[in-house]
Image (cartoon, rainbow, N blue to C red; front, side, top):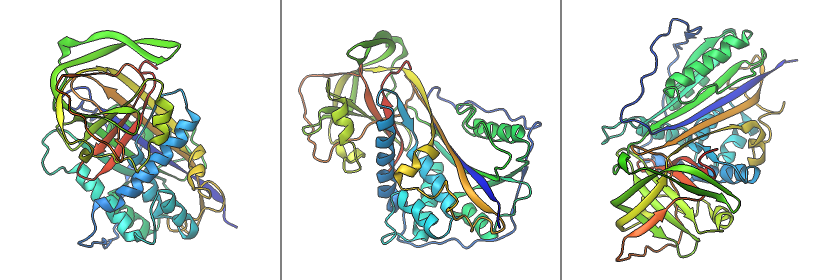
Length: 428
C-alpha cells in the first residue's frame, strides 16, 4: 500500500513599477543550500505552424474572471490583487504530471475546452506565451520575467518524461532540497522567489511539513514605465472615499496636459481609462459611477473585452490618480475546489506521471501579488464592455480616481491578462 505524500504548489505574482531601472538582487549565493538537477533526457517538443499563444487566451480569461468573482465574494470590502496568468502557468505545468481524471479536471478548471484544444496545443500555447513575455520583439525597456521552478526532495525520483515536458514547455528549473529540514527548505523557497522578484515577494511560504515531497513555484515579475509619466512636482494629498462612512488621505498624482484613451460606457455605469506602458502592456482602470461599485463588479466577465481595440479615440484629460502600494496573499487550496478542482487535494488525485513509486497529493497552493503605482510607472488597469461607444467631448475631461476602482494589466502581444484586482482602500 502506497504512502501518500503531500505536494504543495506555490505561486508568486508581482508587479513593480517604482524606478526606471530594476533593483539588482544580491548575487551572494554562499548560503544557498540546494544543488541544481540537470536531467540527461531529451524531449521532442510539439510544434505546429498554426499554433499560437492566442489559442489559450480565451481559456485564461475565463479562469481569471471566475477566480476574481470567487475571491470577491469572500472579500467584499477588501483590496483584491492577483496574477491569473501566474496561477494558470503553475497549474498547467502541474497537469503534465497528472493522469486520468485529475489531468482533465485541471485543464477544464483552467477554462480549456479539450474538444477544441489538444493537450499538446495547450502546453505549446503556454510555452509561446512565456517566450513572448520574456523576449519582447520591440521593447528595449525592462518588461516581464516569467519563470518556473520545481523544488523536490533529494530522494524523490521524477519520471524523465515529466522533467522533459516541464522543461520543454515551461522552461522549469529543478532544485534539490532536504524536506526533513523544513526551516532550510522554507528559506530556500522564499530566498529563490525573493531573488527572482527583486525583493518584492517575501515570505511566500511558511509552515511546510516534513512530509512534503515537491514544491512547484511560478513567478511573474513585471516592471512597466509609463509612456506618459506623471510629473513628480504636481503631487498633493487628497481624500479617497472608501465608502459612505470611510474617508482616507492618499498622495495623489496629477496630469493636466496629456492625451489618454478613455470611454464612458453606455451600458455599464463606469468610466474606463487606458494608460500605455513603454513595453508590451497596457493598463486599464475602471472607475464605477458613485454607488455602482457592486453593479459594475457583477458585470465583469470575459464577454467584456479587455483589449486595446475597445478604445478608438484619445483626447486630453485632467487626471488625478492615487499613488499607493498594496499586497495580497491567497491560500488557493481553499479556493480552487470551488472552481472545479475537486480531487486535487484528496486521495483521489492522480500524479502518477510525476512519480510512480509514491502516492502524491496536493496539499497547499499559495499565491502572493504586490502592486505598486507611482509617477514613473504603474501596473493595473481595467476592462471595457462588449457594447461601448466613445464620446468625444470638445472640453478637457476631468477624471478623478478618488473612490474604489478596478484594475487590469493586459499583455498586448499575447492577449492575456497578467494581473487584475480591485483597489478598495489604497492605504490598507
